[in-house]
Amino acid sequence: MNLNKILFAFIKIAFTVMVVLLIVFGTINLCRTGYDYGYRLFTETAVDLAPGEDVLVLVEPGTSGHTLARKLEEKGLIRDAKLFYLQLKLSAYSKSIEPGTYTLNTSMTPKEMMIAMSPGEQETQTTEATEAAGE
Image (cartoon, rainbow, N blue to C red; front, side, top):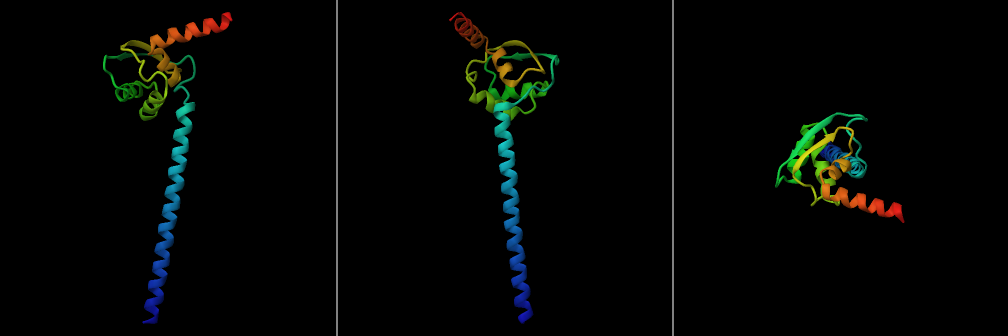
């Protein structure tokens, strides 16, 4: 009977250690993934090096950010649609993507693609750059 108590205590301790190790491993993995995603959110690079490949993208009226991101991923312009969607929502271009047909390149960063699909924003940036150079 004493042996049963010792065996039960050993199993209980082993199970507790396994649960703690699983929690620690899961937390480390979650933190690593979160850090990587957060880092890429602000530093995502282009899919290819220059000169890249030109790809035509049609943005229809009413296209959501999710749909646009999936379309860009399917055409090989971005690596991760969810990441692009977050980048778009956190950028100044979130509300300024206009419908139209755009020639994007695989050597463009996600930010450059957002700028290319926001013609009104391009004109504003050009005007600001011209004014800054003239001062």
